Image 1 (cartoon, rainbow, N blue to C red):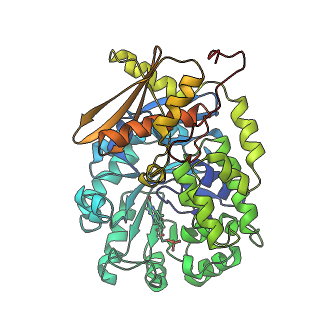
Image 2 (cartoon, helix red, strand yellow):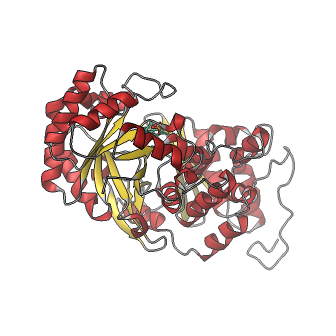
Length: 446
Ligand SMILES: Cc1cc2nc3c(=O)[nH]c(=O)nc-3n(C[C@H](O)[C@H](O)[C@H](O)COP(=O)(O)O)c2cc1C
């Protein structure tokens, strides 16, 4: 399963379902999903999302922690961040039926990993590594792998790899940099070649993106080092069709494929923007890149890539929002009955209304013009973070986010309501009336 393979490396935020499917379409043999902290997965609820045809593991707030579909189930490897063998085992048992394998991240140098005794913190604790891997292998029906970074000395690195091999893992992915090496520094191919010569399990080389522009570059690295497979991250991010044999397609074409999957599988806007921001040459120039990624309306972004109509068509056919339902049930259980609005609202978006009519006022004028009773606004506060509430007739809506004061929280809930109900959020000059009085047969009678 891990020999002669061209593999997508795990990437937080980037390696969600749409990106993985894009890489598979272009010829990736296996796709490692973005790291999920095992403890987080254990708190998730699994649902079968019939609208999208996916299995979703939802966080307590209804956000998607991990989404997958049968299209990738024999190709996707679930990667976890973990420091406790029992937690690892529980997480693996929760997910193993939906994926092709389980991987443990032993290379992440980020603070949150190190502080949690996960990622690269494990590299100097071979006994703990062995406990985690042996436990996983004993409970899991799917292959278990791990992804490491090299250590400072060759001796330590080779010894660690042999210890890992002794656990019975199906393959070992090695990023040819230490925990302290910058990603702009060359990958150490020599040490990976040596690892290959001392272990007999498949070795997957990682860290070569600086030398990769196409599939034959990947093949050349495999030949040069004698490794079994290659796993790439950044080169795939720049253009996911880098896996394609013999040559990649244009970035624009690859972006379109990726974006179609984003529409099909409801990729959140901030992830979409983050991901296409690195696609090399996706935009005509820097100016249009800035303009497009600043768009706050999803459709406008899709429009730029020629997918506005597809987006509208898919959106219009969708009935029911499973995440919304999930939240509703949860709140009903808690005796609370309000709908949580979903929108990406950054401080920049709200600041853009400075000196203009604010979203709350736009909404008030629209509600008045359309015959609704006067809305009520209020906020709640927890740890200095505010949630905005809005009541319109008998319905209550909430907008949760990192809002630091009452005003921002109420503007945010108004903004999110307008987005959801397609109420135009133009930047009207102060003093303007946002809508002509309604004179159709609708509720307003205006
Ligand atoms: C945006 C981004 C997110 C990443 N997230 C993860 C992750 O979740 N798990 C992991 O093991 N490595 C992660 N990595 C590291 C990559 O998987 C890979 O090891 C590294 O980028 C070197 O490979 P490359 O030269 O092909 O980019 C991430 C890298 C990037 C650029």
